[in-house]
Length: 324
Image (cartoon, rainbow, N blue to C red; front, side, top):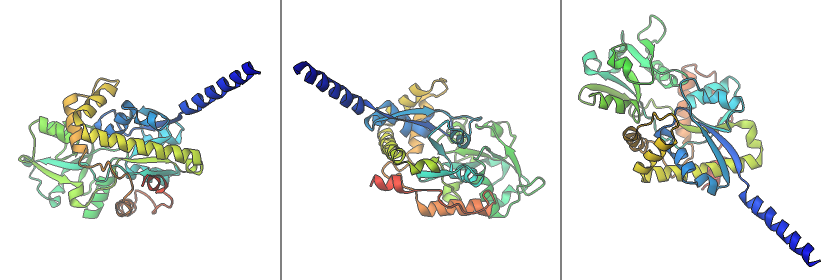
């Protein structure tokens, strides 16, 4: 009997240990390559913040040929980082994406023009070539042009160049102005000798033309699963801890990003610059969606006919409310 009791006790202890070690698996698809734009998630994984929340998180890098909306629709991810324009457009086409958190409160998008182009105001855009990224990144630009009454159609007021994800179209004079992110390509422009003294800078946020950028999105049907919602909540909690750590420890965060980049393309100096600039856009203490910013973003997308109508159920506050 004593041996039986000991065996049962050992079995119970093993089951308890197994249950304690059990982790929910989640896959996060990034919008772009491994870089400090996503430092919060990369740091959260490296520092064990996801593990602390009993999560086993896989982070998938993006790239020019990766559409996060398609990845999650095909079952390749549980959560994606996406700009609201791309997510709303996908939802309009039948992919039921829902915003569950919005760490990025401000836009990092700018259009920059060398002074020699003689572009100083929006009125000077007429007859000029403007570089724009596509694959869902073009929506803020088209919404801005629509607001200004400038035609982007072939033969219209401005010529739109589908630019590469760098500053080469400006260096090679393929475009009069190019799109940059404050935390990425603008740094490349600074390294190339450009800056406020020889550039005209159109900052989307300062102009009031910013649309919401890096938010967290999941598929709507999964929100009917209480266990999934619980896992998402723990994910957001750990991610925001990662963001806070990254912003408080920029040098270490930059090194973690470099160490996490399997391609070897991430350079420490640039990643350090990126953490500093991203810190101006992210609120590490508040992942909740700003509904005024949401309404402004959706209105711009509808006005530009990027989406057919304002969506219903495109966001939930359940996850962020649970963290208050």
